[in-house]
Length: 270
Image (cartoon, rainbow, N blue to C red):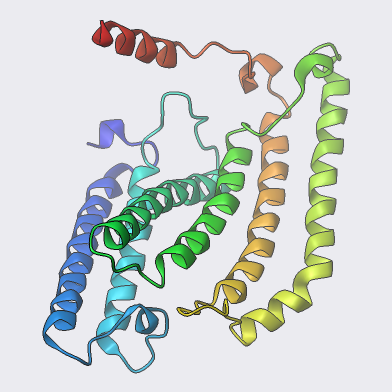
């Protein structure tokens, strides 16, 4: 197993065991809460799940769920995709782990919306929380995906002029680009810190029937992740400084793996 490890090495097996254990524990606790809701009139609902004060079982489940997501993100980040840029350094690893988390959250959004569709149109019992939960998760998926895209150098870049420049001019344009990103992050934090702090301290809610604290968590999360994007941009600049442009990839590169997958799919459809 360690032969296929990207960076965990001998820790790959323990992380996998921890991931499986936390997932099983979370599912068991979730099943217990569902069963309690069926047999008890005082069962916990989704409102209590986001306000678990004084409810030890809910707190244990949320902690278990958080550890399951964390261990799954770390374990999945130990495998490099066919077209992925391998991480180089601690901050790259952090960005890849958070990128894996955003992928898991995307799958979770699909499950939430599937539950809502079945509940609404099959059983005529729409939920009060599915839409808000999908918005909540989707916002963080959007932010974390931006961080992952920056680490992978897959953000939008215009190569028509860049490729015609000498290397010193390319480095200068890279410096200007990173400087603008850092300036944007500084300006955003400077202008939004007080508002984010106030929303977080009072844990501002969404004002709906479920009333989750989306603004109270999203606004400070936005500032934190934007700062991380700026740090990742600086990290990329340092890592790519002595590289040849051909080593950094190009949007015009041919993805042989994707072409083989398309060819295989077409052959199967014949």
